[in-house]
Every structure is written in structure tokens, then in C-alpha cells.
Amino acid sequence: MNATEQKVLRFIKENDLSKTNDKILIALSGGPDSIFVLHFFNKYKNKFKIELSAVHINHLLRGQESDRDEMFCEAVCKELVIPLYSYRKNVKALAKRKNLSIELAAREVRYSVFQKLAKENKSDKIVTAHTANDNVETVFLNLIKGAGLNGIAGIPLKRGNIIRPILCLTKTEILNYLESNQFEYRIDQSNLSNEFERNFLRNEIIPLISKLNPSLDKAILNTSVNLQGLINELNLDKDETDLRFKRNEFVKIPITYFAKKNKKISLHLLKNVLDKNFGVKFQSTDIKKITSLIDNQAGKSEELSAGLIALRSRDEILIKHKTEKPKLISKQIKAGEKVKIGNKTLSIEKINPANIKIIKDSNIEFISADGLQSIFQIRNWKDGDKFNPIGMKGTKKVSDYLNDIRMDSFEKKNQLVLLNNNKIVWIIGKRLDDNFKITSTTKKALKLIISNG
Image 1 (cartoon, rainbow, N blue to C red):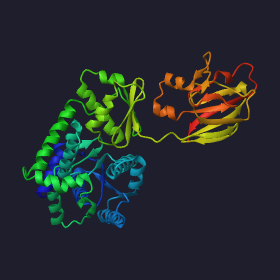
Image 2 (cartoon, rainbow, N blue to C red):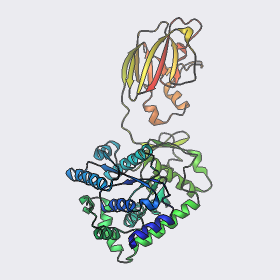
Image 3 (cartoon, rainbow, N blue to C red):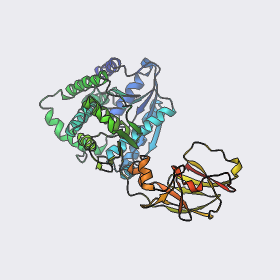
């Protein structure tokens, strides 16, 4: 057992990164760091009593070089008799579609695949090969961008089921180990280019700073570990229950959230939730833009980094991916037909009034078909549209109704209505017009259903 292996074994034990009988999934790129991890865990799998598998993702960014990385990983795993799961993902297309940088898109792809695969093959831990050098780069990048406490705390030793057992090693230690053991690895030539900001830090800035402190990586790691311990001690690294969110889609922040006594902790929790939810690192300027909306009127918005936007509604601030103008929809449908509208389907079914059982489901409604024309129209609501909300007297503007139910501006733009003979029958998924309700004299009835897919 050499010194490098002892160092990693000690690091794993001190930080409780692995347990007996763990099923370990190793993120394998083919580069020196992940190859070290693969050989290390393979050598000590009996000591840890663990079961190994590996995952490789071809980002399709470097043509034949990416393909060679994939083939190399397959060959190494075959030789070591370690199951390998290979995936090909078009990162460039995802980056364009979501308005993300290539780096952010690649990260999103990787962790999505890792978690899905870990769930499928019931892996207890996912191992990523981040090193002490990676941690230094991350701390500096986050510091330069004005990141919060989590950002300057660097790369977590563990986060959920993800562990980083070689954060204690420098790139030099890893390369020396691989050379002495004659283990082959691949070199990603794009890491040598200063086109990416991380590479520029790695190749130009950090070597200069290291002249002031040759043990910079160790010093930064010690600071990271201390800060991460402080975060855990203060119980800051958690989801804030006052916030509503859906993974990678939106975060809703009640205006009352900002009235908390400890503003700094509230903002830290907010940034933490945003970072986790959208898989990006929010900058201090983003947080300032969000909080600037507190005293603004409903409808005001701020553009954030990573293609996100913050919008002030009546009593909350919504964070969401910036979207283009709503798609204009104008379709016709008859009873007995189904029509696809976006990612949903609208169906109109004939039904005997005697068989109607009213249920509390806003996606299902029953209407009287007496006197209706055979063709219905589906379209976006327009300014000036009016209807008679069921259970209410008189007419109401659709815009006022949508405001009354506190629909945010993003959803409002895409709200559809169902019409018959140019009269609104249904604010789809929301409210019927009273003129079309089922009564004791109804002879013909229709069932309206809006569903996913």
C-alpha cells in the first residue's frame, strides 16, 4: 500500500464516505482522475466489501476523440470485469435549447444520467473524481462571481448519494500514481484550451497564486471542509419549506418570505434552493435582482443568468426559465374527437345526462349540449374576452378572472379557452361559463376532459 492509497483510505474513513456492502457507481470519463478512482476501488473492493459498476457519458462534443474515450472506457472495464453503462447525449443541442453554456448543459446531463442509473441499478453511492485542484478552481470561480456561502465552501465531500473520495489528492499525485503503476488514461485536449473560464483559471491564474502558497490546494481544501462543517452545523444546507418549487421548472417565493427576522439566512436558503432546483450557481447579482422585485408592482420582471427570469406577481416572485412569446393556438374540435394542444390533449365525449357524476377535478367538466353548434373552437384568450363564471351573476373579463385566481403572468399568457358559436364555454382547466351548466332540463350533455400527453 503506497502513500497515495493510504491518503485516500484515511480521507474516506475520516469523512465516512463509504460503508460496508455499498453498491458503488463510478463516473468514468477515461481521464486520469476517474481512471485512478476506478483502479483504486477495484483494488480495495474486497476490503470495503463493495460492488462496483461504472458509467460513461459521451457528450458528442469532440467527434472521434469522444468516441475513442468511450471505447477506451469499455476496454478498461472489460479488463477489470466491471459492468459499464455507456450513454450518448447531444450536449450541444441541449445547451442551445435551454440557453445554457456547454459546461452547464454537460453537467446537467451527467448528474441526471447518474441519478437515474443509480436508481435503476440500486446503487448506494455515486463516485465522482473531483480532486483538490478542481476544488481550488471551483472556490475561485465562485468567489470571482460573488457566490454565497455554499459557493465559496467549494465542492462538497458528499451531497446526498454523491461522494468525492479523491478531493484530498492533487492532480500531480494522481498522475504520479498512474505512471508508477503503468495505468493508461485519456487526455481531453479541450482542457488545455483557455477558451473556457475554468481552464483559464487552471492554466494561467492559479499557477501564479500558487507561487505565494505552494500548498494552496491543501489550504483551500481545509477551508472548504471547515465551511461545509459550519453550514451543516447551522442547518443551512436544506430546502426552505416556505418556498414552492418543481425540479428544473420553477421556484415560487412568497413575498412574506422576505419578512423573516434573519435576512442573511433567508437569502442563503433561497440561493441554496435555487442552485439545487435549476442545477446552476446563482450569482449575488441574481439574488439582488430578485429582492429588487419585492417593492415593485405585479408584472415587473428581471432577467437572471442561465436563461432564467424572475417575475413579480401579486403576492409572490416566480423564478422560471425564460420563454419565448406564447404559441398562438387556434383549433377546431367536434364531440367525439380529441385534439392535441401543446403537451396536453382535449377530448369531448358525448354522455347521457342521467349518467353524470360530478367530481372535483378542474380538468373534467360536464356541459349541456342543448342548442350548441357541432364545432367548438380552441384558442388563446384575448383582451376583452368575457364570460359568466359558473355560480356567479353577471359577466367578468377573462383577464380579471385570471388575476382573481392569482395566476402568474407566465401561465396567464398560455391560458386557452373553449368556445362555441363565438361564446366562451370553458376557461380550460379553470372555470365553466354558467350558461352551459347541466340543469334538470338538460337533454344532451358533453364531457370535457383535458389530460397530459
